[in-house]
Length: 588
Image (cartoon, rainbow, N blue to C red):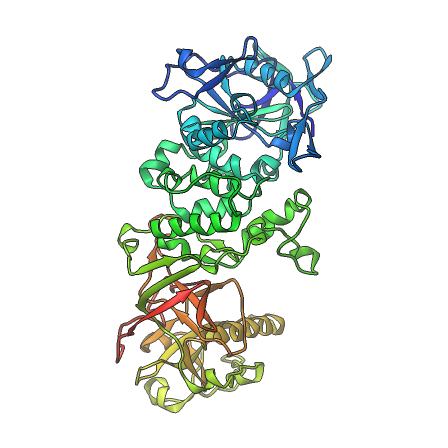
């Protein structure tokens, strides 16, 4: 693929408008030399390779997708993909003239426009045929990008539509302005590549350069939902301690040319892990991945905190054309999407089948150390909750639409009835003008007393279609819940909204699973002794518990349970007759 670059660029001057400029309004100035310098740099004046030790000012780094730097062809001898540049990159100047150049010529023009003197660019700064040099430089990638003054990210799909009507101008501002689709960056090939994730995370600032537009990361990170994390200043991320789950959320939706790069790119984000693995493109990639994820899990066991696909369905579908194979697809066109990590047969505890929960957790929840890793096996020991009732063992639990009594029709209609022993004030007849709440009795394994579980509030204004949809959701949630508690189907009751406050009831949180099996052949376990509590505004009221499922002699990680944010959660230890016991589980 070849890139078109226009020297007349749009640049963001407010949160609403993009104006065209004859030259960039924010050019770079010479910066001091950092303590670390790459082995080689490109001198932009003549595009010569010079030793980094001889440069006495700051440098910049380039981030791009390799297949956008020319034609990608397979080497007949090695079978590897290589770049063939036929000089078809295009530069369009202010007077409308066009010039076709090679990739290096395009880079030189961009750097001159932004006053960049020295650039680190992998294809020129690393001898790709020298394996020893390549391995050495891979170990330094995180240092190269974190010490660069700024990273220039090439995104040719990033383009502004120029408004046809002129407006007033000053200085270099031209008589037009443009608008841009915010989604073009997150839909670009740059966003879908794994190495560019490492490069972006390690960069202090990113300059996104498109066909006819450029913008700095600090101007857009709050508006581009999928760029907020990677556009945060790296030094700030270091202070806040990068969480593994957010990195994996970003990494698992991205692809790479070589399987080994899935490890080497991620390892550069965590230099302490990089020092523990051996960089060798001849080793079995799956073995390397299992070794790497083992180090991640030892570093942070919250790697188990993941659920089913949500945003991946949107991001993966948008970029379906970028991948030749779909690893997670259905016959429903609206659900067709790709998650590259699912290409690999990794252990379930890596989150390969799910989507990690992003955001930081309280430090007090992370020191859980009662676990060990041996190859594909993760052994954890903690308190747990499961339903050991005989109906699970024999697959007898079912819940159907007719098992739930219909709600009453309102105060103007006949009164409705509930179980006398739980009726408020000993009265069977209850009315409510607004709506009623559905309750049911449940019992946790090993407990003597039942718990009253709040399920759903029905408003009299709801239509029959709404009611049917609500019943379907109720059945779905309770069927999953029955894997962990005994549900007494005959105890369903509708209660007056005003009277429910008199009851000692519990709330049900949210099950976020990678799979939903309504058959009770396999035992489900909630790891109650391994809780993760949110430490951010968007996550601070959330507590997550991993969920595993028995498969023969081991268990499979299948998601999390998010504790009810208000009131008492159904799994709360309050009022328990017996506290959960510790057990050991081997997860693969």
